Amino acid sequence: MATTYKRVASSKNAVTDGVIGGYAWTSKTLTFGFTKQDIDKNGIDDFAEGDWKDFYREMFADIAACINVTFRETAVADATLKQTLLDTGGGGFSGGPGPTEDTVTTAVGIDPKSVKAAAEIIRLGTFSDVWLHEIAHSLGLKHTHDSLAGPTLPGVVDEDDKGTGLLNSSIYSVMGYTYAFWGEDNPFTKAKDFGATLNAQPGSLGAIDIAALQHMYGAKAHNTGNDLYRFSDNVDFNRGYTTLWDTGGNDTIAYTGTSRAKIDLRAATLKAEIGGGGWLSTSERLTGGFTIANSVVIENAEGGPAADILIGNAVGNVLDGGRGADALQGLAGNDIYVVDNVGNRVSEAASAGTDLVKSSISFTLGANVENLLLTGSLAVNGTGNGLANRLTGNAAANTLSGAAGSDTLDGGQGADSLTGGTGNDTYVVDNKGDKVIEEANAGTDVVRSSISLALAANIENLVLTGNAAVSGKGNALSNAIAGNAAANTLDGGAGSDMLSGNAGKDQFVFSTALGATNVDHLRDFSAIDDTIVLTSKIFMALTPGTLSAGLFKDIAAAKVDASDRLLYDGDTGALFYDADGSGAGKAVQFAVLGNKAAITSADFFIV
Image: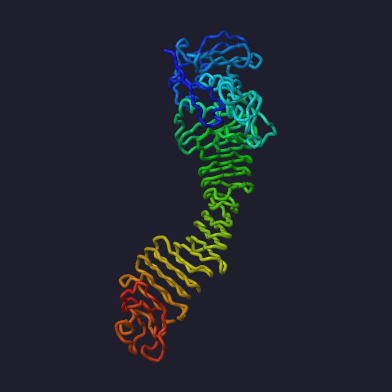
């Protein structure tokens, strides 16, 4: 039964419409077969099993991976797509679906002058452009310059026109006859086209062709896992310029050669502009490489040992240039840059995601990059910029400087030096050798410490982390100090401090001279679990040890007498020290219990 055809409606896209011939096959299963030809010039026989036939089979399989069509090999008499090989010279011809075609013959001519001795020479890609071009005709695509079967590619009138945004290049569509590429797509050469030379032709359909055929036949899921696409300085069989069709997973393009490489993760936009047909990933020595079809997302790029150029896309990319002095540009998305060379350059636009540099060398963040992680084992340093950076050290002794912005500095396991600069900074401390440095009036800062810590000058707040029973002490400022879930010892030092013990049996220590500017606020004192510790050097009327019941009075419930020394107002939570009880001396407030806990003399201890 003959395979029927159907009219193809406009894709509403000027780029893909530029190669759609107007008709497509209706069947989702298309048969192909091989005709027998007597080809004997230069020792090349006809379709020898394992040579020419395998070449065709591979191309059909590659196309079937992109579109919702199954190609089935059959006897040529029963085939819709009849493949033949001629020795009448280069070039080829093919019919396509339409009113006059039930079956089509696709022929490729072999030029004896271009072929030396064996089919293997052809398999390197010399004629892959012609094969793909003619097969695409048989599926319903037209020339990019053909205005009779439909609109031309934007900017194309004649077959030699390069088109708007250089779209009329065989890199982007095998339906054209030019070989142009944008200079920035291959910055390693001054050439303006790659020419129809050995190993220089497309090894797959271009992004424009794939989009057009998907409009005609539907798209197919392909390579949905975490795929790795490698290229080096040599062109593999049938892989000169290859367009990637990948519909899922976390994928990587990796360069495995030794020269300079450019990896560009941007997909074809299918717009009449530079990049409409894709962006080229290639190397200095390679005539070939990868482009990425429209809607495909490749997440990661890995360069080689030379100075590479890596460009990301709109998602979160990992860009690892390798050992050379690389240029890394992430574009939008939350990108990760791997830096290991002092010549590495990281470029980010404003408001283009929250980005991270992972560096094994000392590094200063450039503009618009938010975070830095020091890797490796060396004592390297990290410096921020004007943003709210997160700087994280490694296990060695690092020096981290936040500069401007409200930064988070975490030195890691070593004895680190942490300087926040201006802004409301956060310091993470986990080593007794860590040193926190802050200037006066440089923001409201907090130290998050998993070890016992006394706040350095000019730092306002302290939070104890982890599970250990560690202690925290304030400085001359009015600090906010919070414990963890263990039994903490909190001493606000001078200033009117805010103390929170949280869970655990905590001790609140008062060890500095009393006064109106040194009244601490105990936010969550527990009369069951916590203790107020007073130093006898400050509270000189008290002797070390447990507090005698006669020295404590709740003045909200009873009057002060001569023996009272600690006065508590249960109605307000105010706590006073009175050196002479009801004598002439005035009581001095030194704390307030925010929860107005019902405390007694048993809640105090004198040291």
